[in-house]
Image (cartoon, rainbow, N blue to C red; front, side, top):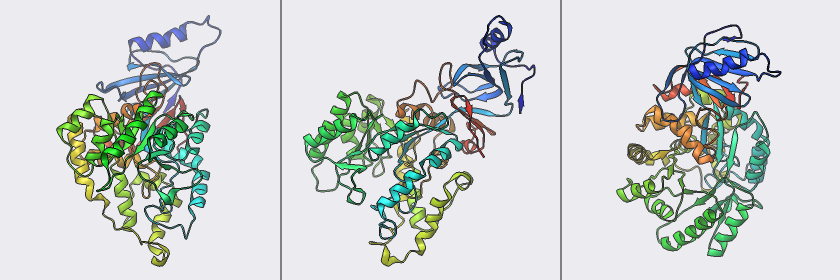
Length: 464
């Protein structure tokens, strides 16, 4: 409900701030202020929820925030009565891939459908739809995303979005520095680039660094019989060079052995769950010693299995905000003649790792490791935008408290972005990226799906 007449609002400090604008009539110009009044606030700082609070927004930033006091409305002040609503920082998906659409053609290295749609055509189709993809994030309450590895053009895409007011903040890593080639994805601008020598590692990191990535992504794939120490040495060279250039490093290393190797080499972020074994004391000590951020990406395996098993189950928000053409492609998979799919459709067995992923998440959460929410969106079966809400549901099913999950989707995800001073927490001076909810997300994380309004940089997002 909107109103601009005299009302009661905001606490001691906030009341003084607003009254100074109303009473100082001698000022030739008064800033326009938006007050979100009578709202319950989860601010992302880790502090308790603020009941009966108010948020004052001036321009794109938060002018003040706290419990209510007394204030009279006046010229230049718009008050949104948010009684019964819940404010949280704009959500952040800390792991997406903009070069992948989420449809059945997105990963020919997973299921080869290039005879039906050439990979170059799929990439062109995906690029054309990116403006729509960005809006799906905003409508889902997601005001920031991290592209966790893709072609060089994803860095150009990040740069093109930065001056735009009504799109999510985008951080990007550029091409994955990999211990293994990925031939089905190779092109003139490949998302995955193999390093085989120390010089390869140095050259690739330096080439990516020229584009000023927000982080560098290591793809550490190890098979039995390969020389783990040699691979780890190459990864260490890439990480050391990244750090020398002032760039943080995220690592895909989903087995305990490879995860320890990348942690020993200095990785700052682990972008997937440890899925093969229970984490041990040595692993925990390594994570805690360097305050490494852990992104479980629980739902991506569920997405693959549902599509490959021809048994997709969508949440209400996925039905409402997911790309309908992507969803329709999943239904088409079962109608494609087997003769046109080299190797056939993979067996739906990826979620066999979920119990171990859940257990390890419980252990790490109990150990107060920083856990960030990320979906791996763009992989087959994982929708850009609303998938983050399903990811948070799974984090809750794994045993995390909703409060801690919200921290993972706000403050800790902002740290992955490298934008923790501006987003992820609602406090004075930070960007006014705010989601207003109809129900309490601290009671049940599924309530993040009950979106009332989204504010990005002080502006309301059109949700229809």
